[in-house]
Image (cartoon, rainbow, N blue to C red; front, side, top):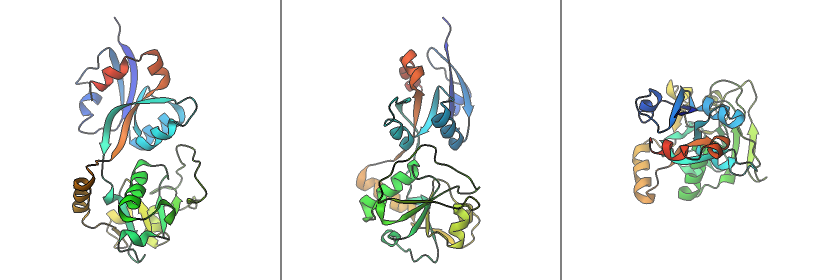
Length: 246
């Protein structure tokens, strides 16, 4: 009996490499795998459903459940898990020395709905009493101009969200002090090159993350694996086959 042909897109992690290189079989399935940056995978899957199976932002998947047709079904496989205390960057002259100082500040984030940003806002609220409504958020591309939200947002009015000018980037704005902080899954170039203008909020972030885990026992989920609803409805057995290869 011929195997079911499915397309899969994900990033190459140590835990996905064997699948991408076809070293392990998936029962009843012939996978055509694409090794893509997660931003491209998410965009193509969320906007156009280009793949049968794909790595997906957890927050984007949860938001998709609010849609009438619920286009995806996820399996409990998590290619990426991180704590994210290390992903809060601040401008050196912003007056921010501890989490409470973020109140009233200008905070950049590539997209408001990013899973990393969602968890950061939750950690700051739960652990440091910095409410989600306590800052003004600025969205836009981190390194190259032009980055729209991948999914439509409907936010309550008390959340203040503004788009940055199309000619600017969040990394540049942070380096220049035009924003006070940045919540981002990737290190901004202004931090990487060591300009001196940008530093982490938690300098000893590894210790902070360890303390957080010992306290909460939570290891934050960043990405899950989603199947197109149409493919699942036709072949529900693929869920078990794919899960068995996680």
